[in-house]
Image (tube, rainbow, N blue to C red; front, side, top):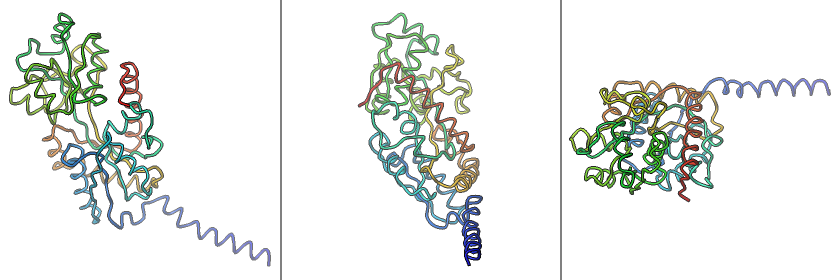
Length: 328
């Protein structure tokens, strides 16, 4: 009887384990209900626009509603915490920005989430170049002439940003360090709007700002474009050199958004979301819509996004430490 009981128990265990093995190898019927994507910013911004484009495409592919939930505030912390605490079943995702995902960990003493330990990367959503802009009537037209001018005006030369700890600020500090312009004064603003107004007016000598907000001002002639912050030239500004091309090799500064999920989501589900998101991001409609916003559609694998996040955390942590930037 003991042998029969043992054999029955083993057989039962084998049968019981089979569905688990199958689920580990494929995504089953995922998704079989609504999926939500949290955006840690208010509605209307570039990350929100990307997420809604992606949600629409995934809804069509999956035959299930993909709902966008805006949970802005506290430098993206509110939305990130909500996503980190969600059930890791693939039905709650997060379209995170570069600030909350790679900068906050170095800016804040304590966070209710960890960008690496509490999440699993899925796919890069988009990148938005930071434009190095200046007043339209500035006596310099490129990186080299700006550096030369700033060296001749050490007591007054400045750069503006859209706020302390912002990508705009960090890009300025990286430029300041790499160019040797240690005297360049940082002037922080509360948002892109007022910083742009004062750049147009000549109060700001230079600023790094997202193409989404500064691009239109360059095109209408109210600001001058000195260089592109990305490592390669941007298709929207093919004749404008990068900062790296202009004498600061290795310089790279831009904002980006990536789709991630709470840690613990089964790999097969991550792979399915990754593959379907790539199809949507590579569609002409989505690529064209993002380019109109000054962005470039992303794509790739979970592994690639994970390595990219690690490199971004290390890169900006050094800038923050070397520049002694704090927001606490």
